[in-house]
Amino acid sequence: MHDGVAAYVLGVLDDSEHEAFERHLDVCEQCQAELLELSEVPEKLDELKQAPSASEDDPPMSMSR
Image 1 (tube, rainbow, N blue to C red):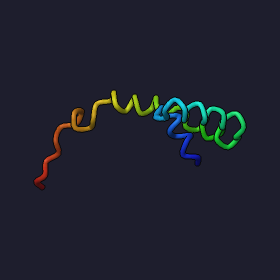
Image 2 (image 1 turned 135 degrees about the vertical axis):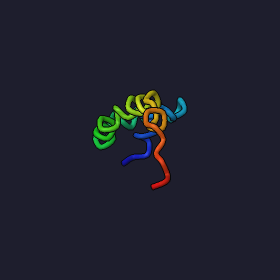
Image 3 (image 1 turned 90 degrees about the horizontal axis):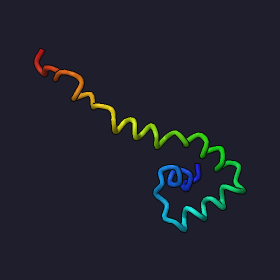
Image 4 (image 1 turned 90 degrees about the vertical axis):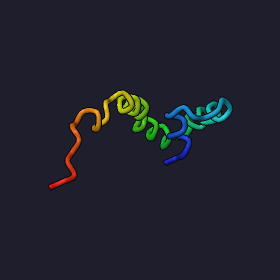
């Protein structure tokens, strides 16, 4: 996997890196395919941030047996 694909999907590239990677995407079929595979990652990460944690949903487990 090209490191730039994940950085691009997550939006962590600066403006010049972003533009350079988009030019690269125009000609690289492998990165285009990887981009399709990772395109839902930011949305899934946002969903995880919004979901209550297990500690909020579940009662505490007893440590004694």
